[in-house]
Length: 204
Image 1 (tube, helix red, strand yellow):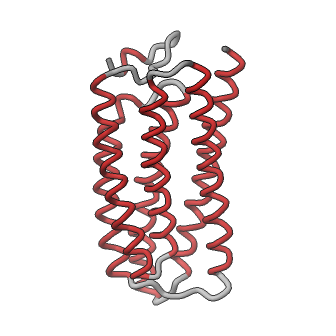
Image 2: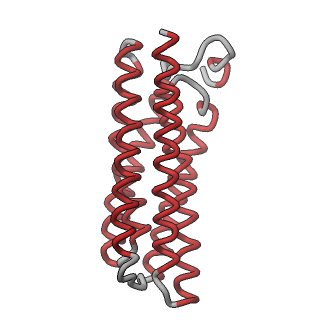
């Protein structure tokens, strides 16, 4: 019940045992990587790693809400999707503000820790993306799950690149640039989710 459920007339709503099993695997991976990344973020003094860890935490809660919403009414699904959109917006603004303050006195992160944990996170998110790729189109609830996983993979690549550049330049600026980019990505995705929620609300 994958892409065949995502036709032009009927949007996939997650009502599939296979999809739910995959979502449970992804929830576990995200919860585990939040613990790993937030610890690594403080150890390495990396703002990008902390931002990515926050994203993992948000995704863990988001995916849990998505599982709850799958078998709920259309209105409940729209409310849950709107909450996820707002949480992404909140994360984006928090990362933007905290990163902006770090620009006042940038610190060079411990790039070996930053790069290694970024690579672990990328592996976890590549697994998540592969599990979800056949379900990337659907209603607002399903669409938000895909966007979160895609954002994580992009963010992880950014963390790894920032670690390499910071190591070469012996500067904390690349780390802060990646964190800033991630904040923009969070806000952009939140807008996409909220716009789709509004469109589906009008259709309902």
